Length: 382
Image (cartoon, one colour):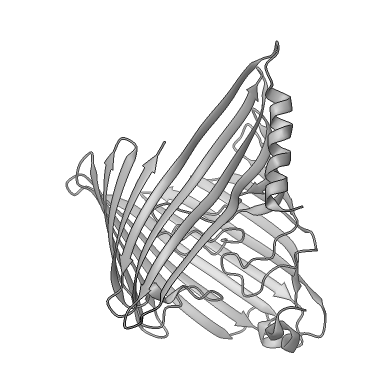
């Protein structure tokens, strides 16, 4: 079933549920977000883009529970002018962004479809970025969803338990070195409990990696699919300042044993300084390792990150985010000014990155953001 068929099915189901008759409260809301941008990199290219994300929300509400859904599309077009070349690259995209149906009560929710699943305490370098690829520097916080079924239950003492089962996903997500096998189910869960002045959580996920279409994996393993187990820990506490920690261990059986284990750890702190309107600061330290054995040294990457945010007033906001890749001594610098008018938001951003742009292991960002450049972004929400 393709994405358009899934959208059509969700629409039919929800129209059948909320069609007018003697029933509890019901609601249909059509909104969306339009964004346009221009980014120029003097050494590489200039890009112009336009994106529209229409969002249809439908719901039916009883006293004790809710049945609702969201259907959202991601439509955009880009024109790019490569410097010192006559050719102009133009491309467009039309794809589903969110397609889900949810049944919810006061302490429980069950959601099926294309959805966003994320968790953890870190903000800049998230060790538990398992199902999304959100970049802290992206003002829109866009990320692809995953197809699956998820359930969450919230106890009265603030303990929560999550379960999920995913199917039909074959894209790299977050810190993935390898992508999932699209035809194999994934499943996992999370337990989050209050602890002292904060909370602590334990998370598990199982999936299979598909190797037939990936020559690199064929060289690493003779199997067509490779089982992978993940376990994660995270916690966050308020002790005058906010402190948090995240850690994830990933295990897979490969013939090339140096990639059998993948480790990610994060330590972070945040604090608001009483300077003017309040200077909010976040600092994090992150490590990423590929090893043969779980606790031995291997192929390591270490990163630090600092984020500063200062509100100039009711309309204007300044943000600076700096990453430092310790082993290669590379700096990634990002600066942003934001102005807000009702439904409008304006962003002026500058970046100064290494010429070889690869901040996150396992992913290679488009080279337009390598080196120095400026971006203007206009956003309208309706």
